Length: 115
Length: 113
Image (cartoon, each protein chain N blue to C red):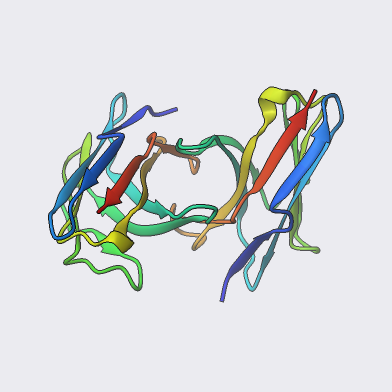
């Protein structure tokens, strides 16, 4: 399966600042990547689908101006949390699907804490 | 609206026993279901996919069943080991033409020696 990395693995930022999270597909050209958010003891919630070279598709209730997604190459998608607030503190995870398969390969996740 | 439920938040079993986890879905007929393992502070890891026309799928000590009449999938771990302790997530496609997934809340499995 595809190997996916995320950077950073954890980040602490002050309220009002912006944070960028990188998701890289290390051994696979990912035309599509997914961004999820997971609160403690909760399920993964899909935030957006990121397509290489085009605009991301956001899920209902996710502010596209707050969570900026860029998928400029087949190996890199970035999620920028702008003007972060404490309620944005969460575990952010990206994934991609393998070639011709439905299973998803996830990155290790990024723990964001906004103080 | 589509809904997926994993009926137990937590399951404790003794080493060597078979763990059985349940996933129920409503208001939808998914073409397949997937099961993932998630360890604390880590991203999920894919385990098994079962299609609607498959009754059962196996991989080593893992077995998944898919009952489209009951709208239920069962996930079994036989001869469980403490290393199997983790949260197990059930997932199905949001639409049968795409790849995005809906996930259940997960069942936290604890296998004690």
